[in-house]
Length: 421
RNA sequence: CGGGAUGUAGCGCAGCCUGGUAGCGCACCACACUGGGGGUGUGGUGGUCGUCGGUUCAAAUCCGGCCAUCCCGACCA
Image 1 (cartoon, helix red, strand yellow):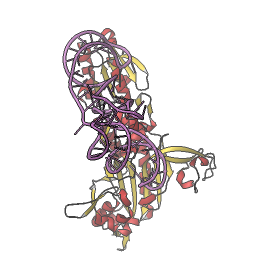
Image 2 (cartoon, chains in turn cyan, red; image 1 turned 45 degrees about the vertical axis):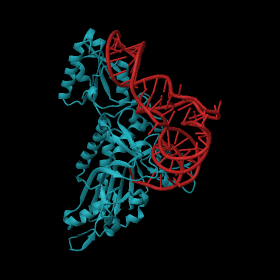
Image 3 (cartoon, chains in turn cyan, orange; image 1 turned 90 degrees about the horizontal axis):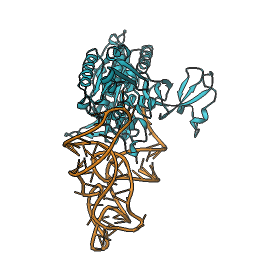
Image 4 (cartoon, chains in turn purple, cyan; image 1 turned 180 degrees about the vertical axis):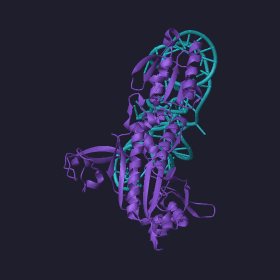
């Protein structure tokens, strides 16, 4: 990729009103996203690269966990929501509209109805279970007040899975597999996270846990034991008007150590739904005695677009974004200074760019006709892990400089670059 | 929906109080210089001041309605 041909509209400043949340401000400044309307964003090429990387890691881990990918419609008919009795329960967060024939539809905020309908129409025997189906798709929830950029947007990209089982034990097995898969996802991306017990909320069901990326700006308050794995969304421990901070230092409910209060961003949520939907929507299979049984269900969500923002909330400095290597939009950049004066810089940088690209590195060649200052600032803002600089040192000594995002610098020659990076 | 705030050039802002020919910085275009931390110079492009109405000889400025956006709250994967 040549920077000069790429679409990366970086900004020096964002409006005061858009700068309240660091991830939003940095995503705007680095040219990852632009706001189209409140809570609705366009992903630009750079942002989309990151989004796709998160998406692919999630997809790989889902496939590894034995889940199968589908793509369900974003537009859903009212009849399915009547079956689950959620058309009336869901409230104005469900964006509804009519088609030209005056039939009612909504934009999908979640897909329990569609998947349950699909499975009940196509799975008749317990022999076909368990099933674990997922999709990666845009959801729409008409939030009362969208905020914090893509962290709480109305339109967002989510991976949602639904599992179907004859027995509760089988559901528990899959739940544990998904729990492990979610941990793998966040570990692979390289984020610091906690799994916490949660309130299952409006989706309903029996048991649920949330995956929180730890960050100071997190919306949720977590109570975590200082000496065991115990962690819970602080809401669940609060009584009446109690303040979350008052939990700090109290004895952990599991008996191990004291509670610490920390902030998290909820990026994943796994539920055991039980038979809630299968009963409402009459989804059954025949068991080994030929009896119709309502299926046990689980559902598992990951906020893909939210993970992108959460990663920034957890990893940034005064210069800009710091990407974990796993989701950085590029592995490295090559920066030229004065290439139009020194044709050797132009030719050599291009050759290195081609060589590294051919070897599978994702490289952006910053060939813009600008000075060092502007280029390195942009590279730091955008969060590229390392930059290889062709400049005066190359003209005079055939040396390039490798500048890492944390500020460390190494002088090298082209032949040694590959082993360093 | 309650409370608070904002809306002026592509972006960031000043001007509004005290009405009188719309400004600054950045960006952008041209040319030259420069080329290791957002460089310099010269010359340019770009705005029905969110919108509708009112007051006035005259409105970005005063008054009212509406819209949009942001922050706090209730709500929420």
